[in-house]
Figure 1: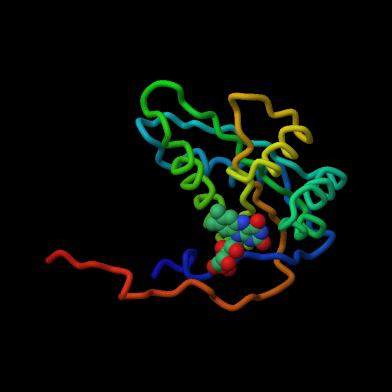
Figure 2 (figure 1 turned 135 degrees about the vertical axis):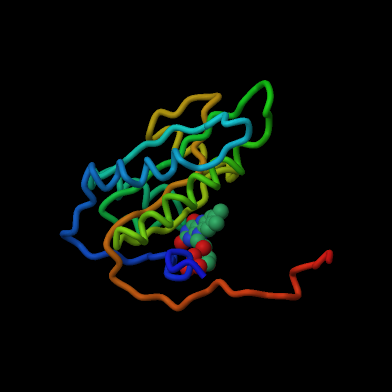
Length: 167
Ligand SMILES: Cc1cc2nc3c(=O)[nH]c(=O)nc-3n(C[C@H](O)[C@H](O)[C@H](O)COP(=O)(O)O)c2cc1C
């Protein structure tokens, strides 16, 4: 298996004093923007956060993003749902962009944690307010980023019973 896929973990504890640079962020965002999207609609925007107070605010408003207290950066993926064709694909498009960020981060020695925002209404409302994200745009998720300070066990695994082979 590809090493980046094998080595990726959700990281929830990061080293302090290890900033994520603008260059790092742009590399991650470049990876996101290389991802496939329905009809190449690219229904996304990104908010790149390194400000300490904003990272702490994210940890405060999201019940499962406390790792942002030690993260040195975060990327918020903002979905722009399409009204015409290809309607309804934005979760898949933004999910693909998210995974590209996670894998690129592994290649850079960075750790990440994907924290879901959409479709939880309270979290969507919290991020709308904190980052001034107005309809029709939707705060889709937040990705905590930093230098890992933990080495969690692998949680993903192959399960043949989940597969139907049509030979
Ligand atoms: C849609 C989605 C939402 C998630 N939301 C959170 C979250 O809010 N907080 C968190 O700590 N982890 C979150 N995770 C990470 C999962 O818990 C993690 O991927 C899973 O337990 C497998 O562990 P691994 O990523 O280390 O392989 C989320 C993952 C996905 C795909």
